[in-house]
Length: 364
Figure (cartoon, rainbow, N blue to C red):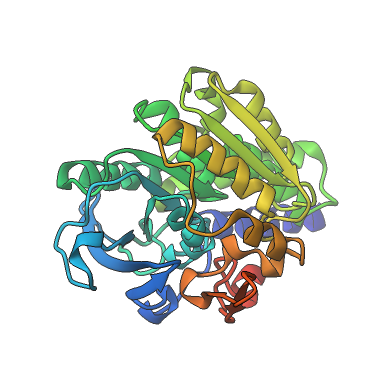
């Protein structure tokens, strides 16, 4: 009996730590890359700013957008031009540097990219994370700021893991005016995720003991972080979600199982698409995912059909493997050169944050 109690205690303590206080991502501004750079003939500038959420916690944010062509050079503009905007929401134990995985994609199709460290993550204030409960309020504060300040004309969300769950919850409960949501590795509810994690970390305990551990997790999270894990349940409202959505999942994901995205996709009440691709939880996604996202965003945000990077160039590099996928590589590391024979060649530099996190952070 004492052995089983030890396993139960070990399981729920590990899950509580993973849910509300995972390792905080430590990074410096240099990990966001240069704040001014050239990309495919356009000048791009990053503007960093702070906002406050409804709990008066300071949140650190960044926006990348093209410098208006008429300026002719880099300059510091207090208010970026209003244009369609993609907001990227990072995963648990991560930070806004993860948004680099979609920066080239966004700039390539004519979007500005905005991201933030949600409360309790990265450089933002907050002691705990909540896997979506409080993060939804952070997203509302950001979207309100973007609209009120004129930094965005229309808004779509792209989230991964915790960020995907937050995007799904925000679209179904707070903001029906979003153009689209793209949810990579979302989970149906925090209770379901905790159940999977307890079973994974303590495989030898019986089902009734798992339920006991879940109740202990619920009590501990409520006491320490002030929210009920039962209230983090995007699937309970997905039937009323009319925002066009793409659900993405790695078929080999053993942290958040593909069944979660499959269930969310089935329940979603609007235009929807499910993409189960090769890879695991942190695997960089193939070009096919980005092309599906491009199609959706072009349609819902009235984007131009032409892109900054030549399509044949993207296809050629992506055929060499995901490591050479130009749409997941930070844009300042890509240089295009046109040879005398008309062939486009590229030099691609190395970056620790190509997939949004270093190998060490992925392991954590």
